[in-house]
Image (cartoon, rainbow, N blue to C red; front, top):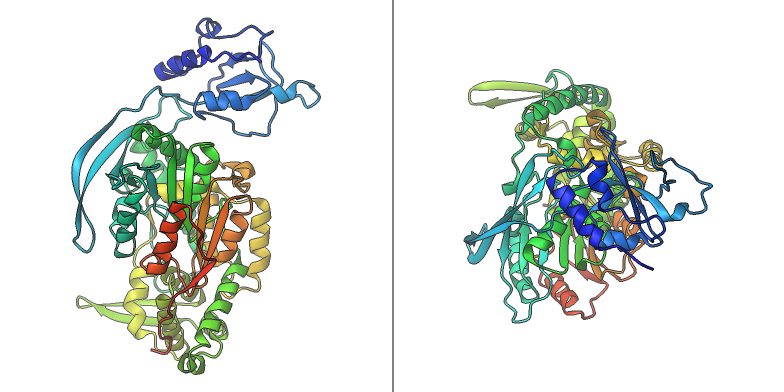
Length: 561
């Protein structure tokens, strides 16, 4: 089979200047229809695309570094001189597909300067601060450009492997800040034995963020929170936020996992690396999953923890499973078991009480008395917003015991600051990621059905499930949300007492991984276990290619204190 790779450079040249619409210029790169590859350009004002004709489209996708993407990879088309049309009866349709055009840069301009990195604990290490430039939205030829920043910690090995890139969660957290945390810094410094370590601030985060935040509006204090009031306010806030960002030149639709995956590929090229290894925790794991699929053959190894699946929205039954695990942990401590014989029942009793009898809370702040009313939804959102790790669960148990007895006054300033003082602060990146990643119809139905018997009703994804509807951004589709299939060596850690991302999410998301090591962290939470020497050793052994145990057990906090 004959392939015209010479044409590829011409395509890149055309796209680097601008998206080509001139048929004469295109004719210079069209191959003969009798040969294996045929390119046809159709230039509609808002729907530019190429038609590629080949027995093996993978050849083309690989040849241009994965920079041609289809809005629907399953959609086949029939080629014509004027306009391609869908034709399911075409016997040759498997050779023709419809691809949206994005830029194919021939090189990435990057710069690095010496940089002294200082961890939160004050430890300093020599590193390099680097940056490179990318389009905000690669599907739009007139897109503004973003400067993306990273810190590179040089490998301590004489024969380093692939760079190891940390992907922070949130979404919206800064990798540069996260790597400086006490629970991560030592681990990542040790990982330098295997390759350069890269703290990469994703678009819209940390040093790579130039999106002005938008402050939403608070809800009335004299009423308890209700879902109807929140949804109405968020719908109004979303309209205003989108207008605000548009006026400031920000294209919020460019902040999605596919663009982030393409940023990672550009980072790889900036570093001059054949492959990257990825470390993704919480929503960083979601970005890693997207990158694995979008960068075939370019990912070396992957570490995942606190996993958010490519189908990002969680199921209410997963939270009930968490409560089962929490109760089992409570029951191992006689004092705690006596005080909290059924924590789930305590939560449900308290929710029912506040549903029918909302409570007014008042406290003094700088000489001013502030009062507000809390109800069932306030308690549910507090439980979700403040509980990540087992130590948080211990505090939550104390909170619910106080709420049932009507003694929430000590918590009033914290509830006010956390839930009621201001409306939601919109960062742009977070809203884009959640809205465009979306939710499948099947998952939406499952959440509704399971919410009827859930301790927290349907709030498990709050407020991100609401974002999908109110921000009304392009949906990446169920094709994007299909599970990733890969043979990339991967280790995945799940904490049994992670109140935010549940082991069931990992089990669902990783079914297509053929070279997978799952590790259960007994009593582990959301982000509290990489400071544990045994967990750190497992990570190092994974990069050495050695065997790793199936589980590790961490000590529990004293739930009765």
